[in-house]
Amino acid sequence: MTEPVALPSAEVDVVIIGGGPAGLSAALNLGRARASVIVIDAGRPRNAATLRSHGFLTRDGVPPLELRKLARAELAAYPDVRVLERTVATALIRTADAATGLRFIVALQGRSPGTPPAVAARAVIVATGLRETLPEIPSLRAYYGMSLFSCAACDAWELQDRPLALIGETPDLAARARLIARWTDRLTVFTNGADVVDTVEEAELAASGILVERRGIDDLEGDRSTVRAVRLADGTTIPIDGGFVRPRWHPALDFLSTVDADRDGEGHLVVDGSGRTSVEGLYAAGDAAAPGPQQLIVAAGQGARAAAVLVHDSVGVQTAH
Ligand SMILES: Cc1cc2nc3c(=O)[nH]c(=O)nc-3n(C[C@H](O)[C@H](O)[C@H](O)COP(=O)(O)OP(=O)(O)OC[C@H]3O[C@@H](n4cnc5c(N)ncnc54)[C@H](O)[C@@H]3O)c2cc1C
Image (tube, rainbow, N blue to C red):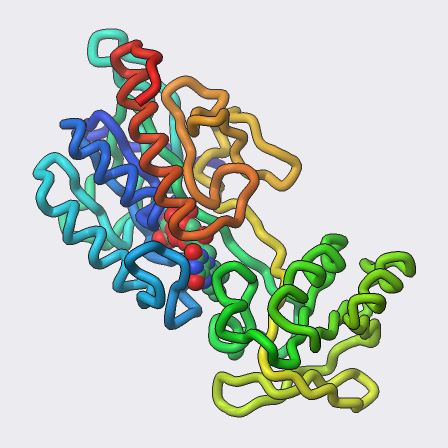
């Protein structure tokens, strides 16, 4: 049963749920547009497992938490923008108050001092990113973000020309292998016993020098955070020097259960080209919006775009920027 939602003691123009690059970039741009904003952030970024983030212009190689710290420091210049850290949005309720224009109530659970039980808002931006499930291999989590990654654009440069693994159990594995082969000609695809690469794909991969290993995986071997071999269930070990894994991605949208916004087949919020969902006043940006997993700079760009469109919508203006 859904918990009753406390009446809001605070109201703002915009609540942003999620304080990653998408949410913080939206907050910066809304602050500059003189909107009052509360950012709610549980503080569990998708890339928390890694030490360095790549590909963000002017910040290539920045530690993930440093990027957020820099962003929050910039927000401090805007007095109407408030960030509630270690706070979770537990429910989003639609409301309608013609006098104030308030459309949503966001219920909160938080450990930040002074966290209200709920906030009312004229608009909401969902920027909650994704949750990931990795293939069930005992040591995989220890190497993830250190020498095994999920995003080729983010991390393949550092692994180039090495013998690499691609581990996954999803039907897009062959396509991912072709992408990763851009950075190495020593790639083995491990399906961990899943029937996800057909014989035509296997032949195409073989023509590019990519091996497909279909046997189940017992575990990974390595030293500290560097993976050195894949040990198969029959005891065979195949040396590698890093690689990629294909997680399964799940939207982090439990709080949206009472709001009937359109989702795609994977559960990501469907948005138009500007970040609007199918529910008026509700926007989405970053990994939470279809098509799902992206990059930091893309998420930040989507946050900025959603903010601009929200401002335009709030005054009924439909021009380009
Ligand atoms: C291992 C790894 C390495 C990566 N490396 C790179 C890289 O080098 N370069 C790159 O560009 N990209 C990289 N990425 C991808 C990048 O992390 C994501 O694309 C980016 O973080 C998406 O930003 P976001 O703002 O949409 O979501 P996130 O950064 O995930 O932020 C979402 C935030 O919302 C919060 N949240 C979720 N639910 C709630 C709720 N109900 N209430 C309140 N808060 C909530 C979360 O705790 C989190 O803080 C990497 C990803 C992984 C997994």
